[in-house]
Image (cartoon, rainbow, N blue to C red; front, side, top):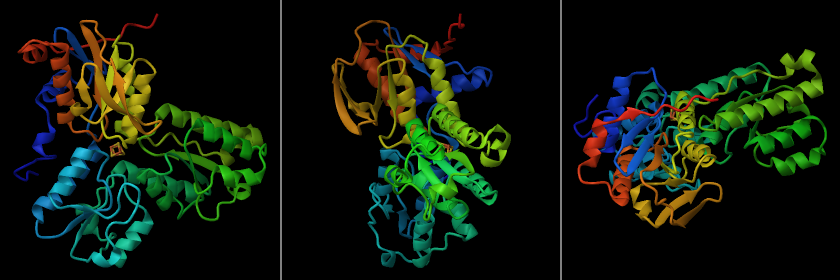
Length: 422
Ligand code: SF4
């Protein structure tokens, strides 16, 4: 469906270099998961097989811009950021879209200010039942099929997790959600799941180990309230609600970590109730990561052995899937999360974001002097290609690539094949 200024997403979100890389990959076909090597003389850029916009993000952007373009006379609101990318949110705001809640969850537009004539867009990560109820009080029927079709951009992969949570709840399991408690998606998943099951949010393996100790009775029950305060569903009773458990996850968590969390809890249930009765106490869910998160994480693992001296991960600073790409790269090389090419101040100063400390940092002498310099460039699922494109161009400038080298390099694109394991 075309709207003049954009087709699936606004045309200016594409980047010519990235476009050519994607055309090259289409020509290679599905047979290779190896990264693409863009040779630019003194610079070699390695781009993983999968990166950038996923299906759910493209769909959300398409629905949001479609609403704005096709119904210009109606006031349009977003519950909160449509996706975690500042450029996309800023462009919607420039078209007059207002947020109902700010990044800290503070309400910006009152229930009374909204009317049934307004458009309200639900973001790709979904929203809580409380927000949906509030919208209905303002005259906006979120259950209406027309609303769901046009304005509810909740990704089907997120909705699939909610459905899985419902099934597990109906089967009598408590649902442990591996996720970031304050992330909109985890809050939405907990809200939708707790209608059917007791729920508890666990951040990582360390928290799973604490939960294991409670399951095994190694920690006093009073400690549970202190350690998991606010992360459980209403009325959660650790004595009663930790007897039959299952794990689902925020779709953008680290796959390996979800497996660790599930392993810790499965072993705890086996130790407490015995192997013979494990099937009753533990539901064997395969993790509920979405395909895009899986693909992007697998693709970045394929790049780690390429001998790159650094990795630049492009994306929003509050994007969960992007921060996990950074985490994977950081295990193998110096890696930096940057919002766009403006963070590359020059060859000696790089501004970037550390999701662990939640601080913006400036790193000196970040660009190694060796030539050719091999750099991994990738982006999260909510990052427009144009931003990655600009980063590649900025790098080419800094490293001193000659005029015309980008065009020459694009004609010499090839796959980089990892060495066989010994
Ligand atoms: S990362 Fe996955 S779950 Fe999230 S919007 Fe994209 S496709 Fe949907």
